[in-house]
Image 1 (tube, rainbow, N blue to C red):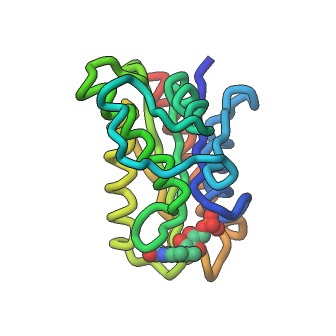
Image 2: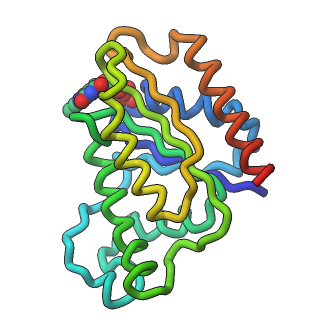
Length: 194
Ligand SMILES: Cc1cc2nc3c(=O)[nH]c(=O)nc-3n(C[C@H](O)[C@H](O)[C@H](O)COP(=O)(O)O)c2cc1C
């Protein structure tokens, strides 16, 4: 069974980025039990404190919901991460989640005992922005998401970016939803063919 981790960065549930992520999942035609959702705003995920304990022993010493998230990421075959653009980056809730994958980085490059297996794992990013199309608004966000996927041993194979959501909600844009479904279909096919 292909396992999917769906990481939600928005503090607003079921809004634009969540709707777009749902459309990507719909295109993948999965069974419900294949998908594990992490709503970062609803989790108790503390920011990284740079204590560097993860460079001395495997794992993060902060005992919060991130411990379960590490397991979900490790088990996932495909990780899909959705975020609204906030100040050209990801939301602070998602940034806390991403920064805590520093423990994975430490386990790989300092301790040489990776917390997240190096099995075949694909990644996909979903980003929404408020104002009308300005391609560069997504550049920094995609860079953040790129390095995070490398850290968690996921090959980022695609992304969908949608602007102008503050003027027109994603749920009212059938062409955009259809594109997201197609991206989902491409993603699952890519996984099966790799
Ligand atoms: C604090 C904050 C910062 C934002 N910064 C940006 C930005 O830099 N670029 C942009 O395109 N949209 C920006 N927006 C608009 C959001 O990206 C937009 O409302 C969001 O994509 C909606 O996603 P959601 O409905 O899933 O929460 C910002 C919104 C907030 C609340």
